[in-house]
Length: 367
Image (cartoon, rainbow, N blue to C red; front, side, top):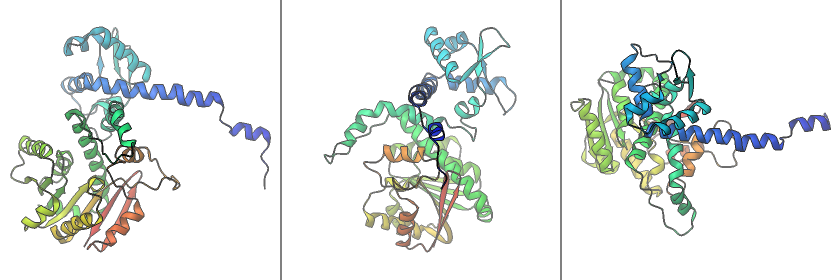
């Protein structure tokens, strides 16, 4: 066995200076970046820059947007000193850079427009970053969740937060659609040719919208138990003029299965499973209903955070998954790959395929 010299050991040791940079400098930059992003979005600066890009650039590929402090202050009726302070901090954090092509101009830094401003860009990560931003304001509720008194704190999110959470879930839905369509091209041809799709737990309709735009000849049904979400989903259908091919109902999965004779080629269960009632018999009854709603050659597509046990060796980036677990630890029940497969084995479904690409994964489940 090769001995490690004292010099080599010292090289591998983390110094006080290294830790200080990590916990103070890097953390401060990270925190301020999230804070400046969140504030910039909430006061309308980022939306303004997106609209400006649409109106002034005759191309879908926008690398950056140029603006001045005075312009933003005047257009959005914002206090100039605060716009200046926001801009200066965003500049320091790397969200912006100085544009030397005009006097006292700034522009978005490379890739910032695609990553944090343009919601229509596949690379957009603004919604998960927005979730980090909102996390700070719910600390008191999270503290209550730690108390072992049997009470589940009531997380009454604002409409703004709820919409961001649903958009983030739809972003995950976009990723699983991409994995699915890449691996099941023949099946997706069927969906393109007037297939039938059920979005179980459709929420505000953001994920449903992703699939409806991609499969524009398919017919959809969306169901959810939240009346506010259903109202928003119906408005989305109305605005897109999809009433001829999309139906939205306020209903539990079991109740819908009892009153319909429809069978579906594809059933979507996107980030819904962990929020179901923890009772195993109830969950089994839901999957019995999902099985009854599926055509014999149909697919149940489950998109869900699969979170390994705490002391399992980490093999990939788990930051988003673990944050999901932390935020919903009191009232959510997450599976890992092993426990979910065991659960499916106890349902009427007979074929289960787990597909993982990078940090994203899907479950393709058949009768």
